Length: 602
Image (cartoon, rainbow, N blue to C red):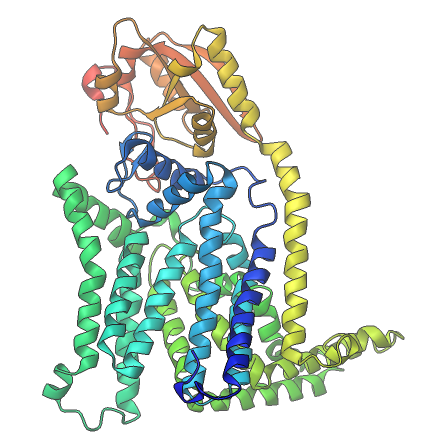
């Protein structure tokens, strides 16, 4: 956003043009990184297939409030992401590229959001416009080239959309606190409500933590010296924050009440307990060590984590490398000089560090850990890294790289390589060190993306494609006289649901086996087809034999290490099965055999 005082200046048109040019540049760079080969790779994650199947069933049934997976209600996530996915499917058609395009769009919008807010906050701190543009552009491109950003932007997963709304809500909160404007608090609350309706109330924790930490910081530096307790309780900051909380929680609360009206309050209690309380306190399936997020962050931010900490690593290793002590001393001195300036950092940098530290601490204390959970902190890391690059860090990195290359190649006459390692003037006379680093990283990540698309994807599709299995299942059923329109397959524990997705795309109806499905589909002398994972669910075949139920193996299928069985059996024999509770993170275990028909339980 440009300052109003410049509105009538002769340079305003040029500044607006350069601002728009930066936005276009970011869009073009992100498109070049994310779009190549977007739909070439088949689904190989059950979560991608789940999200797509749920959105597909929304379009088929017209029920946009209660998500369904293979005909069964599933409340593990709120519905907003499925609405977006259903919109993309309805508008662009049904294929892998379409459903992944939702994440690509969210990644592009998040990069633009980082640029706009970084530019805005640095402008508010009276930085020069060119300096603000450079920092904002670097922050957006650094985020776009993080390894985990490139991964999640090209998958039909919920994380990128969740990060978009969560980060926007936090930026708007900072803007509201800085300007003490009630309207910004209300907008922040609406965006927070969208974030909660995408993945649940985790965003609320960070929203509250950052607000109170900023208030504490303001009190410590004396900004609240003139406030009394009663004056603060009625201040715009506190009133606006409380209104933002109410607006953020209201849509999710309404959704939970609708679930209670549809499935009972026990289902609401189960959703809250299994998805939030148990996952934070006792989810053994995702238990990790206390320092898991340290190396998760380093790996998620590659290659920038390597570039960012290279001078520090050289300084640490300088005592061990006999010829590099001068390099380490110089690097260490420059790093310490940069760290000393933290107490004089702009508000956005302080805000970014508070967000990073509070989010890192909260997630590290949880029992369940995943590198995806910490992804929403990466935009703030990109802002800190951009500020570091433009505060002398880029020159430090380049000089350290050049010195280290000179030390490694000192006995080899490779002057161009030695100079080129960190010397932008070798390739571009007018390039700054930060622009040189951004250009090199972009080219490296683009090359890595092309290698992924044209080398890894064909290899994986050739070895692990499930399309031949889908065709074989259809041929086996047609050989038994089943018509395409009447084919219906049932699943219990739903392993490898990407196979289910491709069966549905080929017109085969697949349903999860539940008591309601049995009572609805039951017909005299009917047969049922059951698809089992032979490795994970092989014990169910033993259960059929133990209960002396007649069945036949229609097909035995394999792809990679996975083996599947397609069984045919009398429909009334399905009641001996006990499918697991429909929460994908809860594993199923064999139970003692009991052949009575009233053993069915969901």
